[in-house]
Amino acid sequence: MADLSNKELKFPKEHSVLVTGGAGFIGSNLCEFLVQNGNKVICFDNFATGKFENLSHLLENENFKLLEGDIRNFEDCKNACANVDYVLHQAALGSVPRSIKDPITSNEVNVSGFLNMLVAARDSKAKRFVYAASSSTYGDSKGLPKIEDVIGKPLSPYAITKYVNELYADIFAKTYGMETIGLRYFNVFGRKQDPKGAYAAVIPKFVMQLMKHESPNINGDGSYSRDFTYIDNVIQANIKALATKNKQAVNSVYNIAFGERTSLNDLIIILKDYLSKYDPKIKDIKTTYGPLREGDVPHSLASVEKAKDLLDYQPTHNLKEGLKEAVSWYWENLK
Image 1 (cartoon, rainbow, N blue to C red):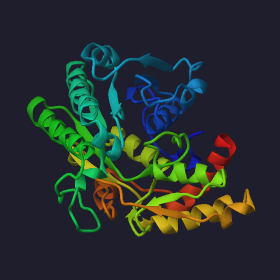
Image 2 (image 1 turned 135 degrees about the vertical axis):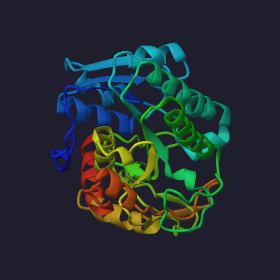
Image 3 (image 1 turned 120 degrees about the vertical axis):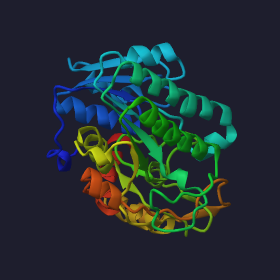
């Protein structure tokens, strides 16, 4: 269930919201929060990476509608956007390695699909289009913490696609008067995140390996660091982006993170500590190390001052607080 730390979030329940990619990790958490809030929610997903079980408990709710379709198909996008007040666009093909292996499909989904959704939302006169942007947009910029206005050159096809999203959103705001807000997510983790498959994110993947008494494998020497962001912080950012009345806040992009950096070696130490409370043998599992991954940024740390100032973003969970909840969820749901 959506965490109680977000129970103070205010968004009028009379508004209908379309969530693209609503069967995925972040999308399904947003659907759940909005349905609990009393909003009419349309989930639009093609189930390429989303999972039916993320939503199955919502299907009986009269405020929830599941629409199977593909953002690469403009007619599907038009149908999805009909009569909705707001759009939360989460649908994308994530993963840097996936985009390196198949840049064409990543571009079709993340760029053409994004443009289809923007046009459909514009034509249906949606009040606001809030979309998932990415910290990968910082590319090879060396400075820390990452500040929204200072980006480098992209390091992967995925990073290019997410930067193009921001450029299109900006042009649609200026040209057609649309309201758009982009949220640059930094390494989101938490309940419903898929640990399986070649492109699984690092936290659920490590958790599953440790629960099976397998050695987690780190790309590189473990010194690379990330600003890991718990799902409840991301839910809060999306709802505040939908709800904000601050005119200065719209048509902009924001870092969404906690604002602290953790190395992969330290992440493993914390995970082993939390998981060994359920299974003491886990603390003795050794870590293995492999070659660095192509397209990976060495370090990532966000400044979240802009989101705090303009969106009143107030992240509730740091890495340890989020991991405590996530590990408990994984133990109960994935063993």
